[in-house]
Amino acid sequence: MGVDSYGATGGTRAAEHLRLIAGELKMADVRTNVALSAFTDFENWTELKPGPHQVRALDALLDEVIAWMRRRSRPWRNKNRTRYFY
Image (cartoon, rainbow, N blue to C red; front, side, top):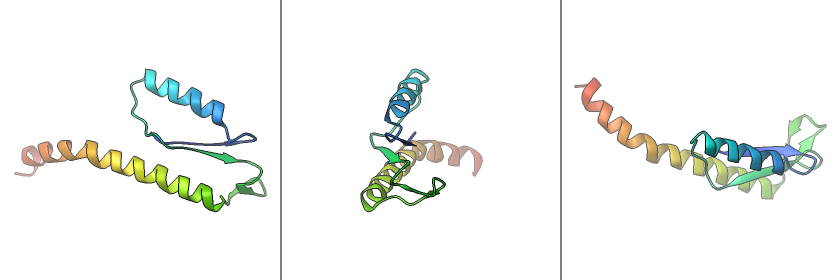
């Protein structure tokens, strides 16, 4: 799970709370957390227009989620390939 939050202060408290709940539900999460400001990272309060530093953070977040998914799905794919495709 990757957490991307937004709000007046970046939604950091909500993101922290969500991560605690996800941990109790035994959901895996990645380290990177992106906190977007409703004032500076959105245009007209509706369209996402992050600054360059936020774009780098969003890219890092997505890279971590994709890497985690690849690492976790590889054993499942290999195991199920022999059972279902041969």
